[in-house]
Length: 400
Ligand SMILES: [Fe+2]
Image (tube, rainbow, N blue to C red):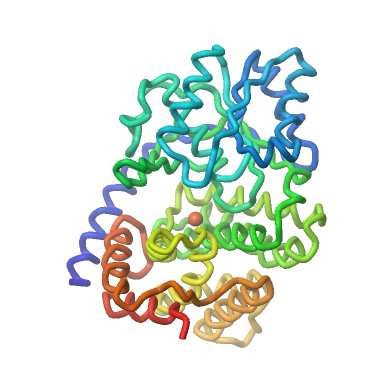
């Protein structure tokens, strides 16, 4: 079974890597630092956009943060229509609601403000506005016409959706989570505005930071890793180890917030070339089955996956131990790799991430492993696990 799936994994990712080589990614403009929302509004004005649809959620409207875009555009005589109906796990219906506002008000651009859900919804609306219904755009490279100009202001530091070619739009009727993947849905410009991040609670800071860290580690050790990917993901990993505990301890630490916003952005950039791996394949199943937030599931799975990948990814994990400064000069590659995993566990403990879950039922394990291995076939994993290893991995996540 493992031999067949491993061969299928090599063949599938081989084809995907050829497709990926021909993708032309847009040159995104990045505004960074406290107050950069205004710089983004100035930029949107310079491009000549007069009426934008702001896609966000009710919390950001109530906190007054959405108003920064309204005021930023009003200063230039621009108008902002607000869609604040975004909820976690964006749906086809949310995209259609946003699309109706674009048509009703004749909006000429879209701004997404929020976490991955708002940005993914906006990607759906921007592409559906110029290509017809969202349903036919779900899949790989289905967006034929350029999307409506799209801009993003992330208010969490984790998903990397502000720079990625992907969006996840679910259909509650079919219970399907559809992935759109197309360079045409990458926002043209983003604002990494640390002022908007200070209100994020420590638990969300911790779990979204773990998600960003997993993107960076999976791309660093994955089979599509190259010098550019390693440069982006290595920078993200160092920033997260240095600043995530500080941001969890003091949410108003602007240097920590700016550093994590950049780390999430770099990790997201590395995803476009590097792809995710076993951590996401397993975390998606656990998160989906038991409604565990993505970053929380990711965090618990990550050290287990790295431990199982020691043989194939040991050299790269040893490089990461050197990078974050936990290795000694005389240590062997094996020791350094294990030191990196130990440092990861220490970081997770320091910021209070759970390592086991009471929800995991023994009778579910078989199905979870089968689905995780099926998903992993699509990813450039450094090591394709056997069923038994997958089973052992999930058993270690069970609360005893
Ligand atoms: Fe993720």
